[in-house]
Image (tube, rainbow, N blue to C red; front, side, top):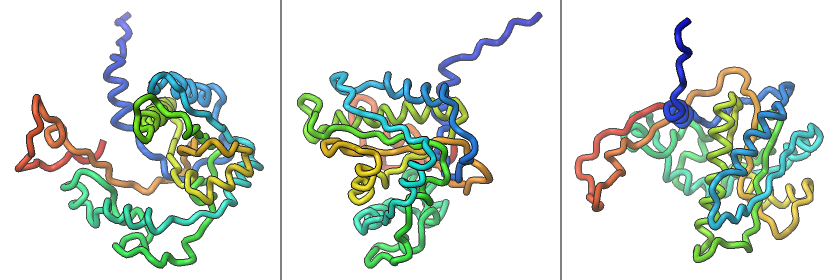
Length: 253
């Protein structure tokens, strides 16, 4: 019999990194996340690097249908600050996005978000979190203690970076398991965070860093162009050199 091919771990990891994406489609609420997969995702976060090994995080896993419904009924609305700063990152054509290599397409957002002056926002754009959650069977809310700071880290930059490491580990593991994941930053906004404290009994000294929904997408997700700058646009050898003629970025993947 021929030898069984051995999968190169480095190639496998590279493939996972390249194909990881935000699963923005609605999820199947009747298909629960297997406990073993959930534990693997949380284990990945547990072994993520953290500044000074502080592990300054707590995870609230919400998979009880009644609690998910209660969270879904929380009202949210994008702030004028978010819309204004989001506008600065928009491209108004795929060609522009490919040329820049950073940011997102304007068509991914409501028309009122596609202008430099976001005020006043239409009243109709005040909706509930249910639309954001997309009928997901599970939500993981990551909270942390802002009074604990990594040593010699102004603004706790290293601590926030550590939370990002946990997020990345969760995301790559979810993708490897075939589980859809999307970050929901709206959960950390003031009004939403306050309601989450009430529903989930979150102590007042802890803050919401981010939340993610987990599950299995149903139907066709709206496609979106993924771009990254090529290495020669941001890698410098031995000294910083201003790039004069920047080549176009690599799209997709």
